[in-house]
Image (cartoon, rainbow, N blue to C red):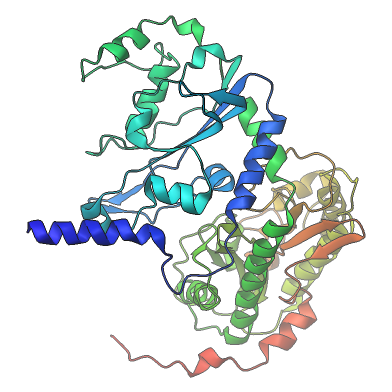
Length: 492
């Protein structure tokens, strides 16, 4: 047993020195993340410190967790994909007792041969230095008794805690890291300090007055939103790939769709295409709503067993190396729009065209929505669905645009549009059963959503490969699908 443990430790220790074979080679570089930290530092007020925590591990049920997903801000600044970590960014250079200067520190989960045998290799301190480019990297346990004097800074910036993480047996898990940070910044009114180690140094720190540390839980979110809303060249490469993968999913389902399909099967086709192109995850829970189900804006049950002759609203996005698309198409399950479906669809299409045209540098963020909304409101009145334009909002209850990036609803300041922003334009009309209109419109739900890159020469539709007009959709739906040949055994 001792020999086996030694071998495991040796293998896992050596794994730092080489990369796993067969991995993609188009991840963001360590230099990218370093530049992002530098840019954040340039925007921070003087004599301040910013503190970021990795995302929590989320429990699915019993001893099964959800697939881990890093906090987007943490990943943006570090490239680190593992849990139980802390990043500290200082506005100016600091100096340790040995005279070494530093302006950032990364605390990571410690290497552990037994744990790595079950859940995969960890970077550890040496990996964080060699692969992520951090000069000051430490095990998370070292943060628990940090010598950082937070009271000397004009501001200690962090985002407020939701406290939705578990305390595990690991002595330096996220629970302990947050606990330690709260102790270090003296949030004694919000958190009970427990010194189970009888460490005199901890007791000394606990005696510092609470007002000695000036905390700020608002500014950091604004700083990060300002950073992330403008995409760099490297980010656009990954984001464009995520969008194109999503558009390919929409194209393939248009060819494969038939009235006997279930919502779940339609979802599966999209997500299979994502995996085929190397997408690691979906950017958000897939929405596939047939008929009246499409009137639920974030419908994710996808449980209808046959879509029949309904319109099928499909709002899905592939995530590629952290960056997520957000593309919606609405198509007739039988391949042809009926009269009422086509009238509503073409109205939304016209509105989206106007919204995309409004995506120009200098326009207010609200302009695409205003352009789309004016057309839809008038159109609903002309069709007799709404009595007055003031009544029309109930059929178009959401905004038309948001940023995308590492989050499907990426942070931004929602200011005037600038080059290299990527936003959605997604008008929609939803007429649920029982609406105050002619029943012939009941159950019609249409949303068309594309991902638009703002450029100096006008908007670029990154998801244009997925047909949008009603005629183009009907034309593609007549093509044969390679998926139609898939014939599985009946399990009934």
